[in-house]
Length: 105
Image (cartoon, rainbow, N blue to C red):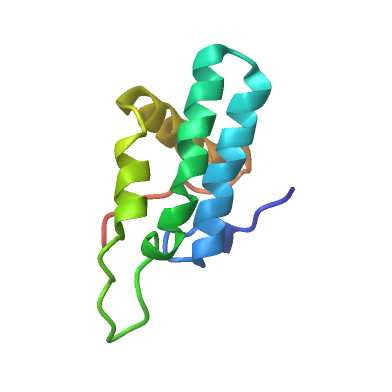
């Protein structure tokens, strides 16, 4: 599955952000370890957060996440979240793309 630079953009469509998280979950499941499977299960619960994962249209306020999203987010362990961010942050270099930075320039 090839991803474009636009799909790696944190301001891209919510589906791209969610797809990336689910891709990481699949990779972790393929690893086969019990911890990897547990993390993948935690990440799959984040589907309820998709609509809250990207900035809103100009002039619109970001909606507050619902209880289902907050519960799913609270169920993701620190280790799982950190490992997932590490995997996501390593992808651009592996694709020959510049690193993603979140600082405004």
